[in-house]
Length: 193
Image (cartoon, rainbow, N blue to C red; front, side):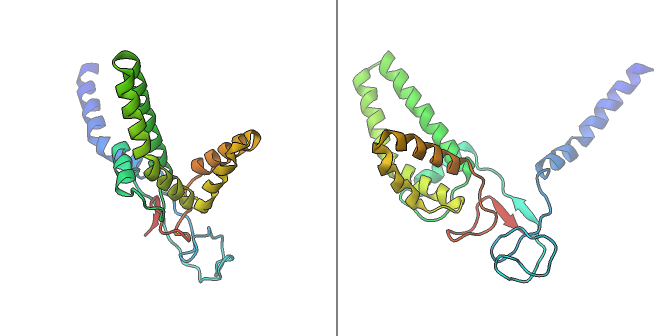
């Protein structure tokens, strides 16, 4: 009968759930060949065309994304650390938290006390200035760009250049991490077996 099959079907689905979760977790893991020396993607061959290192096959894995709070804590732990690398998700999670805090301060200033929340907002902005700049530099390092690109922000005084610099920085911040190590350190997103 139909009623006797329904519990059995539900039981089969529940039994296969851990396997589905396991498959989903490792869904993005692909076998790709990269040079263990410079991180260049390799096609068929014996040596890396970029650095000349001998060919070794490696499996590239993507590390688990940090949670929003882990990314925010990491910004404060690396308060003035302008070296190293920061993942794309780490950068954008911190931006999201800062937007939420800014919204709460704006809401509080209009509903409760403008002076108090303007003071809190100003103090928070000053407190996050150095770690925010350090995070921006580490994010640029993760994409293989120098942190000196931020010096181009001085050119933002000129209105036309302002828009061009903002678009350029957004493109850099949205770019994927360099696979493997680069001159700024090991990747926090990708690793090899």
